[in-house]
Image (cartoon, rainbow over all chains, first blue to last red; front, side, top):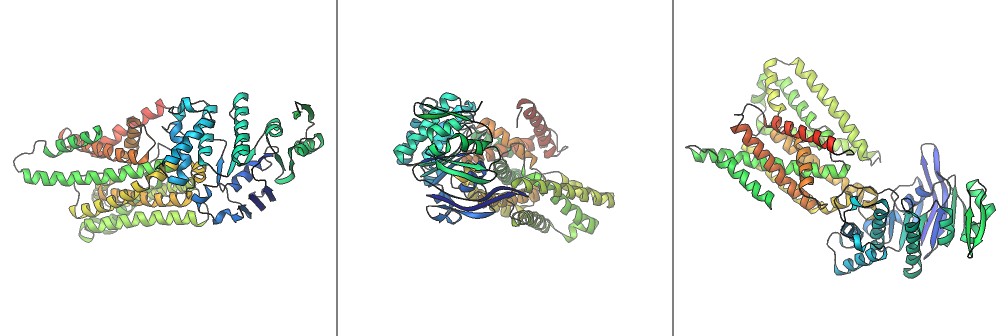
Length: 251
Length: 308
């Protein structure tokens, strides 16, 4: 389980995270939502040790992440940020193989190759596995990086706006894959989302941040309500039921 | 493979071209130069490739950190104090030791200063390096203005890299240091592969990012110091050879890139030295040849690729 306690982060005088504390449910998809600058991405970066906090602790399986060896933590927790532009001559398959680095470094075992194959399969990258990364479209690149995270095979997967570069088809595909990872493989997924409808459709829990504080943390049904959403985003949002799923109209 | 053959070819050309009568002397003399070229090639290749991967920038070389300006400052300082007595007071070995120690101490102070404040920011390090480098250059030009014009020639001799007056006492220790660092560096090259993916990915994949970067910066500092103290400022070569290597060997594996880059550097230096000796009859320094070619190549890079 991932637990954060009293996380504080400041840039100069600006408080980005203000004593944030919560627990993330195991084996579920939790979406982080909130307006720009609410602290979603910062919280995700702190949990994944990309950013050091000014106060508070992050616990992964009851152990402080600063006490983990970097390599060991990389076998439990993976993070994918939104911007990944490299100008490397590296193929999709080679990139996905890096997901096994925490286990075998650069010498892949048979098991590693199997994991890489499976990840490539899950993300439908078989036909472009030998293409160079810098020749791919934004969406394909994004999927290649996701495959790397899948190959890393961690209990916890953290994603920062993974749908940013994707068209509708690939967004839906991506979220379905996340669902599959959570339901079939029992992965715990924490995901920063901007599109409230994707959060409504695919997540089990929603955490809403505003001004560096968690203002709501509940099941999806209890968050996707007109009064709650108005409180989070400060705009009027109409909700309609459609095939037993709630759709938000905020246009 | 082709590169290796080319290297052997150019080495042979360099060693055996127009040997003349006293072949024993010629071979010994040229062999010494060949060895120096190999040392410098190894230093420049590893330090430049590693530095470019760490900074994720293909148009930087470690000289940006101010190593070479510090070297010139040390040389100017020595001449400023001892004047024409310089060579009496300080022989080649002492000078080499002073320069290497000076540069390594400078690098460590710089790293300590930045890392002690808890700021693990590589770009801040570069920025401070650039500023100090400029300061060192200004200081040396100031002192060069004050000294006797005759003494200035001593400094001028140090301002350009040359393989013609290598001291054999320095060669073997340099080779030894280069081999050790290169060995350690190649064993760590797999970490460079991961660092090339960017800081966030490297941390995600379980690399102790800050510590690894520090280790590489130390290795780079040692190599640059050794090669600069041995032949003079030559890291501009790094820009040329690394980009040539990236063009010729399309791979992300740093073990391959670094090895290839060592070969490319050695070939470039050998041919440069050969042309300097045979075509230009020693009238231009090798760094001038390399800088002209490198400069044109640099412009070509700028014009061809829109984003660097």
